[in-house]
Image 1: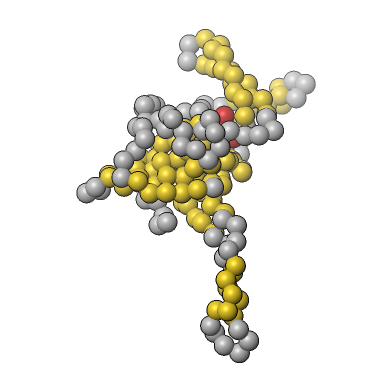
Image 2: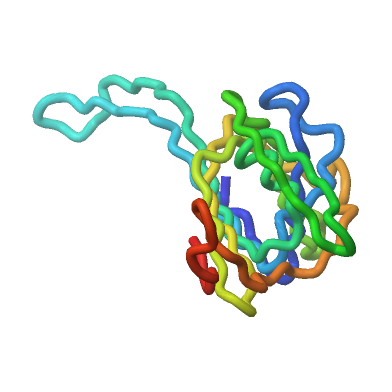
Length: 192
């Protein structure tokens, strides 16, 4: 499968899978803004060549391994469920929230669709996606950036999407924070 195009003409959306590797019934969440998605696939096939010649004498089918590198400016907290597990939100007044994360042994899988609006609609679908690692970084007054890696177990190409994004949110910036261990130690200017 060719690399998915992300940029001006692409709309990547995802949804939580109820059954691992099966297209989510609601693919309508976005990771954020300025999204770059780089897929790769390793079919794991090996070819044995005859001694003294270049002809293949035996082919072995290997295990498929699909990978995604995803980077974006944070605009929504939905991805935390994919990265950590269970997320509980509580308003502490106005537009401020406390987010409590509880790790789980088995992370939620997700379906990813990258719709490209060119002359005709082209959709790349990645099913059975699971985040393997992620980094959240920010500096006071700047946009919060997320980098993550995921694996997927199936990819396909379609000409229409199953759903469309339902959210439009502004990019989140880091305003600052304090680090405390038994008392306030310092103001946080940047984090990763």
